[in-house]
Length: 89
Image (cartoon, rainbow, N blue to C red; front, side, top):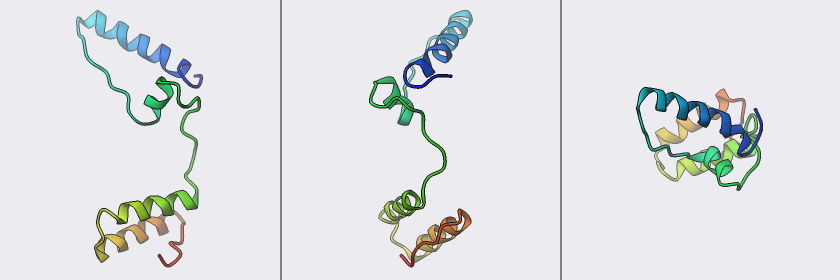
C-alpha cells in the first residue's frame, strides 16, 4: 500500500462498492493521521514506536487532565511498563 492519498484510494473504492452492493449509504469521517493524509498535510503513515521524549510529553499532557497522585502513579507505572524512566517527574 502506498503513502498519502494513494493509501486510501483502493480501500475506499472497495468500501464504496460493498456499500453500493448492499444498497447502503453512509457518511464517512476521517480523523487523526488518516485525515491529515487525505487533505494532503502529511504524506507518510504513522511511524513506529514513540520515542522516550514523546512518551514523557504525552504523560505530562495527560497529567494536566487529572492532577491526582493516584493518576500520576498510574502514569509512572505505564511508563515503566514501556521501559521508560519518568525522570522523577
